[in-house]
Length: 323
Ligand code: NCD
Image (cartoon, rainbow, N blue to C red):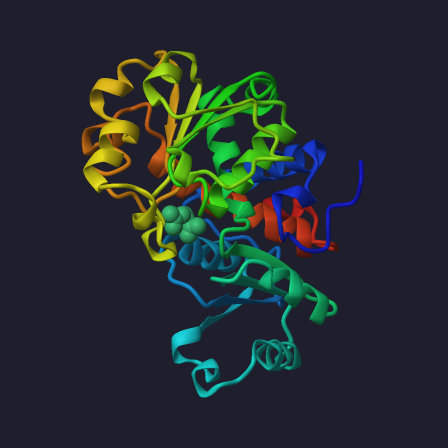
C-alpha cells in the first residue's frame, strides 16, 4: 500500500486503500470515544494549530476535540482577533506559527487553494484542509463515508456496500466544497453518484467529474437512491442569486416528508450541517431514524483523530491506544 500523504488537502490525495485505512483507524478512535475517559496519549508533546479564517461551529470544535483527546496541545487562532486584522500577510502568519513550533496546521479559508499554498511554505508540519472556498473539505467527506459504512453494518461488510451504491447529492453543488470532496470520495470507492440541482446551481462544466448522472428532477431519482446527501444554499457565496425564489427552490429540491417516503426503506439521509430547516430539508425529515445527521457530527471527531494519527502518528503505535 502507498504511504499516507504528508498533508490532507483534497480527497483526491487519497486512493481507495488510504480511505479504507482512515475508516479502519477511525474504528479504533470511535472505541476510545465510548470510554468513560475518552483520552489517549498518542500525540502527547505535539502541537496542533487551528487557523480558521471563515466561520465554523462543528468543524473547528470537532478538530479541537480530536486533538485534545489525543493529548496534543491545541492552539486556536481566530482570524478576527489576530494580527491578520493589522494587515499581516498569510505567509507571515504561517512563518510565525512555524517559529512557535507546530506539528500540524488545520486551516479553513474562503479562498480555494490556500491550504495547498500553505503546504508549500511549511516544512515538517502537516497541513489539513478544513474547507477552502468552493474547492474541498476532505474530512467532511471522510466522516460521511464513515457514517454510511456504519449505517450498512460497519467493518468490511459496510465498506463492500460502496461498490455500486447509488448516492444522490442534492442542492448547491456549484458553490459546495463538500460536494466536490464527496464526489471524489464516493467515486473512489466505486459508488454511482447522481447530482440533483437546478441548472444554475451546477458548475458550468462537469467535465472530469466522476458522476454517473445529473438530474433536475429530485422526485424521479428518490426510488433508486441508497444515500441522499443534502447541501445548504451557500448564501454567503451568492447562491441566492442563482434561484428565482427560496420557495421555488424548496418546492423543487427540498427533502420534504412526502419525498422522504419515496426513498427505499434502507436509505440513509445525510447533511453536513449547518442545516437550514424548511429550505433544503424539512424539520421532521431531519428527525427521522434514517437521518444520520447527528451521527455524522459525532463520527467527525473519531475521523479527525484518525487523520491526525495517520499524518502525525509516526512513532505512535495504534497499540498504544490500549495504554
Ligand atoms: C460545510 C462547510 O463549511 O463547508 N459545513 C461543515 O463544515 N460541516 C457546509 C456548509 O457550510 O454548508
